[in-house]
Length: 537
Image (cartoon, rainbow, N blue to C red):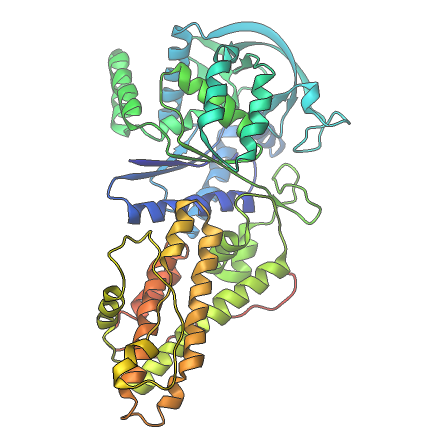
């Protein structure tokens, strides 16, 4: 099994581009792994529906918190459906199943004497839903993420003995796969200074919206502690939850079954997080997993922010986000998928720029690939009556290649000539592309570079057509029939292959291109992408 997890967005406002990036990046990875692996892939998403800022937002809108959460949650669900996000599991933290798993985790930690109660005073950023020490704030005393003053909170809370796991966290940070690797050093330095125990509850009178503790109804679980547990909730069978709810007297027996299922399906193979989340995912979470005797995450991927023109992170709290629906209005669903995956750097911050997005869309989708499909299908219809045996060219290409997997390099050459003879026809009028390099980039979790390589290879088909000029050969159609067929056959074969690969990123477009060249009779294709106006939206 290959288990993929994503951060779960707060439902205190509409989704922005950062949320869309998280969904599309991991949807692409899941589609790729499903194609590559014979074992099961579980892609888990969800929504974080508890916390102080959600409760405050509901109060501002004069709505019951549960009603507010449902309305906002439905917006996210619709967006993921519009973009055809193929999650296998969707965890809502207000659900019965998550409440049961979170309370079970609490009971297991409490049974190990890893939770205790004490009075506490700390600086709390509502936007981050996190406590900060004074040293972690800016010189002005503001939250480094939101630029707002944290509020001082004094409460009697329950604490998790994070300090007991300092050596375990250090070992994890030294040996784990973390990308980019710079986050390893940052959080090693943080941990080496000494971990302090962390508050993992809030008084219910101050936060009435949360999961109650199993042994103290006056307290609810701290949002980050509870939210991390969603990665375990994503692994359970709902029929066990139904039995727990239906037969409360047998709850402990069913909880044992639930825990065995979680242990059997762990670890997380790929955990995706924003760069404001390593404190929880690279420090608190491995400590919790160690305490629970669960295996640690295999790959920890930290993505950068999508910033506005002033270099500030796009967020609901700051109100500077660009709506995903603005992208849909400009580019359509498939075009929006492309500009997010193709133009947002997965490893660093990216400043959102409409001009760059439009230029990339026009260049790669409309001018490069879209026009190429129309061009090749038109040539096939006009010169070969729409009939071409693509399977013959699949065999020809495979015969020229060594026995290889999809992930190994397939040589690339482009040296066509107009001086072909029957003896050197295949040499002069055939095309070899390196499409396997796309998979190599996906193996290293870089869909941006993978897309760049797809369009680099499709550009070679355009170059191939310009050098072989089948429309010139068509002036003597009988004499040059084999040459024309070889040129267009190779183009059709590779475009069909590009369609199959592109479906990992742009499912509708990839499938459409594949089907165009899978027809019994190929006709001139419709325009796949209409160019959009230059300049900002």
